[in-house]
View 1 (cartoon, rainbow, N blue to C red):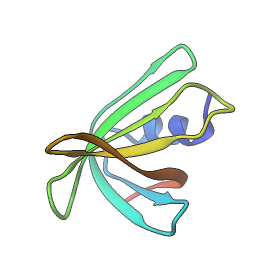
View 2 (cartoon, helix red, strand yellow; view 1 turned 180 degrees about the horizontal axis):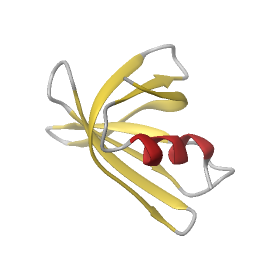
View 3 (cartoon, rainbow, N blue to C red; view 1 turned 180 degrees about the vertical axis):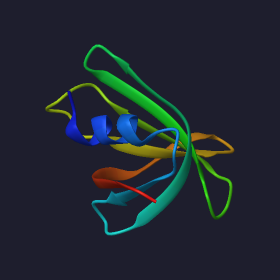
Amino acid sequence: MNTLAKRIHNVAPEPVRLRLDGGDEIDLDMRSAEFFQESFQAEGVDRDGGTTYRMVTDGEDDPLLVARATASGWEVVGEVTDVEPV
């Protein structure tokens, strides 16, 4: 089980702060966080602009990626490096 995904799952539905590999931070109001065996999927809304973000990983050894909704689909923003409650 991915450690960062487990942190999100434990904090949700409370807001979380994601730190990304590029140094950016995103504060999200969580909508959902679910494990499907080792796979994980979560969705939240940016507290500043209302953009929807989705986090996914396929398991312990895979990175936890975050993408944002755009008019043409999902755009990968980066890899999550840390998670904390807001």
